[in-house]
Length: 85
Image (cartoon, rainbow, N blue to C red; front, top):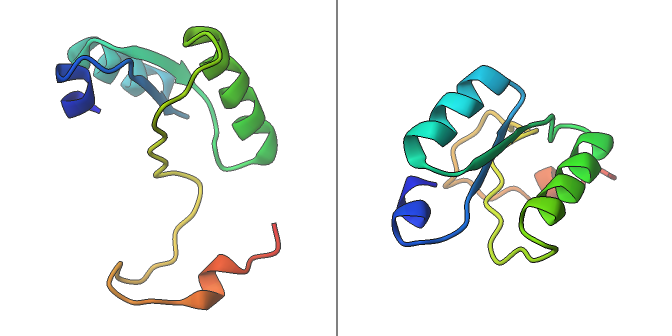
Protein backbone atom coordinates (compact mmCIF):
# COMPACT_ATOMS: atom_id res chain seq x y z
CA UNK A 1 0.00 0.00 0.00
CA UNK A 2 2.80 2.36 0.88
CA UNK A 3 4.52 1.78 -2.44
CA UNK A 4 1.34 2.44 -4.40
CA UNK A 5 0.70 5.62 -2.42
CA UNK A 6 4.27 6.82 -2.97
CA UNK A 7 3.75 6.39 -6.72
CA UNK A 8 0.64 8.57 -6.61
CA UNK A 9 -2.04 5.89 -6.58
CA UNK A 10 -5.29 6.38 -4.71
CA UNK A 11 -5.13 3.83 -1.88
CA UNK A 12 -7.78 2.60 0.52
CA UNK A 13 -6.80 0.37 3.46
CA UNK A 14 -9.32 -1.82 5.19
CA UNK A 15 -9.27 -3.88 8.35
CA UNK A 16 -11.63 -5.05 11.06
CA UNK A 17 -9.46 -3.10 13.50
CA UNK A 18 -10.46 0.50 12.83
CA UNK A 19 -7.82 2.01 15.11
CA UNK A 20 -4.95 0.13 13.46
CA UNK A 21 -6.35 0.88 10.02
CA UNK A 22 -6.68 4.60 10.76
CA UNK A 23 -3.13 4.75 12.12
CA UNK A 24 -1.68 2.97 9.08
CA UNK A 25 -3.67 5.14 6.68
CA UNK A 26 -2.45 8.28 8.40
CA UNK A 27 1.16 7.09 8.20
CA UNK A 28 0.84 6.20 4.51
CA UNK A 29 -1.37 9.15 3.59
CA UNK A 30 -4.36 7.30 2.18
CA UNK A 31 -8.05 6.55 2.75
CA UNK A 32 -9.32 3.80 5.05
CA UNK A 33 -12.53 2.08 6.04
CA UNK A 34 -13.10 -0.48 8.78
CA UNK A 35 -14.75 -3.60 7.39
CA UNK A 36 -14.85 -7.38 7.59
CA UNK A 37 -13.93 -8.87 4.22
CA UNK A 38 -14.47 -12.35 5.66
CA UNK A 39 -18.20 -12.26 4.85
CA UNK A 40 -20.21 -11.57 1.71
CA UNK A 41 -22.00 -8.65 3.44
CA UNK A 42 -18.65 -7.20 4.53
CA UNK A 43 -17.33 -7.43 0.96
CA UNK A 44 -20.48 -5.81 -0.44
CA UNK A 45 -20.26 -2.96 2.08
CA UNK A 46 -16.57 -2.49 1.34
CA UNK A 47 -17.21 -2.42 -2.42
CA UNK A 48 -19.92 0.21 -1.96
CA UNK A 49 -17.69 2.38 0.22
CA UNK A 50 -14.77 2.00 -2.20
CA UNK A 51 -17.05 3.14 -5.02
CA UNK A 52 -17.99 6.22 -3.01
CA UNK A 53 -14.38 7.08 -2.16
CA UNK A 54 -13.07 6.63 -5.71
CA UNK A 55 -16.12 7.74 -7.71
CA UNK A 56 -16.94 4.24 -8.95
CA UNK A 57 -13.49 3.42 -10.34
CA UNK A 58 -11.16 0.72 -9.04
CA UNK A 59 -7.91 0.03 -10.91
CA UNK A 60 -6.19 -2.49 -8.62
CA UNK A 61 -7.39 -4.71 -5.77
CA UNK A 62 -4.96 -6.45 -3.44
CA UNK A 63 -6.87 -8.76 -1.11
CA UNK A 64 -5.19 -10.45 1.80
CA UNK A 65 -8.09 -11.15 4.11
CA UNK A 66 -10.81 -13.52 5.09
CA UNK A 67 -9.15 -16.90 4.49
CA UNK A 68 -6.17 -18.96 5.52
CA UNK A 69 -5.09 -22.35 4.28
CA UNK A 70 -2.27 -23.00 6.71
CA UNK A 71 0.12 -24.12 3.99
CA UNK A 72 3.00 -22.58 2.11
CA UNK A 73 2.31 -20.40 -0.93
CA UNK A 74 4.59 -22.57 -3.02
CA UNK A 75 2.28 -25.56 -2.69
CA UNK A 76 -0.37 -25.81 -5.39
CA UNK A 77 -3.74 -27.05 -4.19
CA UNK A 78 -6.84 -27.17 -6.38
CA UNK A 79 -8.91 -28.06 -3.31
CA UNK A 80 -8.52 -24.60 -1.81
CA UNK A 81 -10.20 -23.03 -4.84
CA UNK A 82 -13.32 -25.20 -4.57
CA UNK A 83 -14.96 -24.11 -1.35
CA UNK A 84 -18.38 -23.75 -2.94
CA UNK A 85 -18.88 -20.08 -2.20
